[in-house]
Image 1 (cartoon, rainbow over the protein chains, first blue to last red):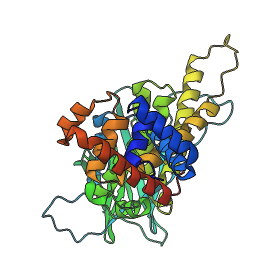
Image 2: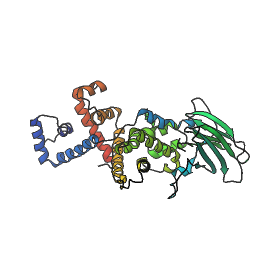
Image 3: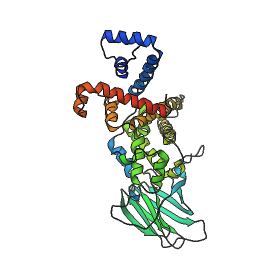
Length: 204
Length: 189
């Protein structure tokens, strides 16, 4: 007995072929369990492909997502001996639910805590509705009993360093009244550079 | 747009590369999961602007939590759950905004519908992941035959791919056979 080819099976599933071809195939499939099983398998695959209801996001939105990572990229040809660490967000007041019955008046400051190895970076973002700016203050802390003083801190957006400052004697830094944007903050420590992604989501 | 050199990498490999500051690995992750993240809010009926907000929020969440997801064998589960939560968050906010004191009608339970959408979208992502494993030629053919909403004719496919019309059928069969093997290998039945 000659089995049905995959090509003919798929043609049949997709409604192609003449009536004679269809009835010949149906007759064979009815008596051949192997071809019957194959037909069911391909039918299921084609149905799944056709039922795909996913949506393609706009290209600029995808590009926005991709560009989030830009600050860590080293331009070609730039040799840097500095190790880079990406800090993880361990606490964010934005993710904390409001207490039952509490009503907000104005936008509360957003408090974030990032961690990279033994180093914690505490960041507080205060939004000023009046001039659409934010003030970002923070402190670089170590689990060891030492302070990171005079450490360079940079605020970047869209891959460009917008603001620079240095920490004070107790590791504190501040960026006052900078325009609202999605910023990445990096701290240059002797051990390497710590990058904090997205210290501001534009809604703090 | 797609970071082709990392296409074969698994999610944990890509996350590890991201944590080493590799932007190409990040691009691969975003390209791989762009549809999954965007489709959940869109299929739930969100306007384009709200779907875009959810997409951005989830991308930010992912970048903030790379350390936590580095051991996830498949990121799709984490991403779909996170996306669903953000959708619910948006729904709750909108309900609060629109609800007046007189409006005491019980709101619908969006979680039920969203959960179905989440599962379906994850399944579709799994199928697309398998299609992505095919050769460029097969991927393009499957895309035009089954994913393209314009349903191009064989003549149009022939023009776009340079494949003679008569060979589209045999090629389609070969590509679907390869896809069947990939689906079986991945345990998708």
